[in-house]
Length: 525
Image (cartoon, rainbow, N blue to C red; front, side):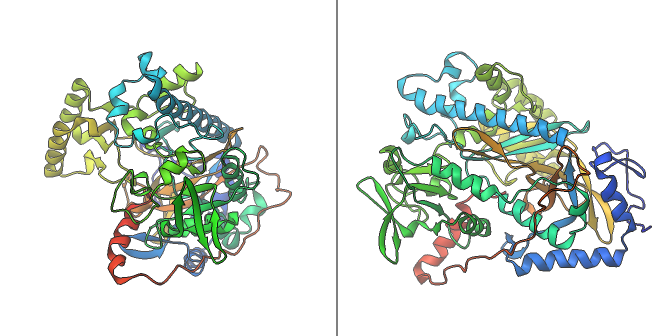
């Protein structure tokens, strides 16, 4: 037996996913725990090196602080039982369904008057109207198959009691699913014996699910829709994901300069001339999508896209204006919206949230900032987030000033000790905090949740911010079948990841501005 678990702390405030106590693995982890205890440090180090080389060789990288590095994948998987996953699956579907209903209410109802949820006193109109992601240019727009959220990533945590809670909703341009697919391929290559023991549900069919949903969203009357993936370009931190999804779906990867919009029709340049585009899976934020309606200096989108969408000649997925449902202030109302729209209780509860726009809540947060996590309502990728217990006195003073100056821009939540999982650090297994981003695809007939999702892990000790853009890593997420000891009939085999070569030619007078916009133009995970 190795000393990998020596001095591993248990009984901490955080819920440990693997260990209920010293040498007491939870049932789902018993096999993994024993396997790790039997492995030598040399064997583990060898496999860690193999994982890292595999990601470098196959191009699975991430831009962190201007440095291109292999995306950190920890060798210890996260395991979710079938019963646990059933709760997550039903809760995510419920959440996405309600957010779809809300967006339909906001954008279709806003033209004729007041959204039902506002009229009935469930949601204040000022919460919607003051959101920087509420776009009146798409008011009244109805999507061809009634879907605005084609892809969503609902961030979950496990609290100190092991209960899954929703941390935030991502229904604009959620990223990270490529790492779910790549993590599984890497793990089946480096730890093939693990998949002989466990019946792990596959994730490789995600591209086909996504393509089916995009084709189903094509404008009415389109028989054989042309789908493209719109990327900000090679300088975007998630460019690897854009290339992977385009390749695995068998569709074109395009940039804004490849598209032309005229007469309400969007066409792309090809070697055989212009070809009409019916569905654009955009990985570009709203602000950069159409310089006519948004940022006039954007080089990432195409002039006229919004008008083409309004004319019903092209579908943009996810829909423009979805960001109002991402707003963290609106997030605090989602449990009430679930009861209002569905007459159901939330399956997945929120984290307790203080709305700084409300005077009493603001005063409480000002008095207790050192015990809160304070977030800008429109932030993503952990940007602007302040963990009070880890902030200096000067940082807390600056935060309080910002809260008083613009309370609408902030929410606050009590510090929750995110669950931990043993993570290989400096030759030993140490507890590190994790979250989970399940991805859901909506084709208009049903919402399908990919069995697994992106488990992000904060690598520094005690760190609670797990975002990849803040230096976090990831784990392969195993969702077990009903009988976890049954071997799958057709276990997934590793497949080679091939990354498309990026375009290499840019005009000197464009490269600086384009690089800056591409870094901003897609939401980080």
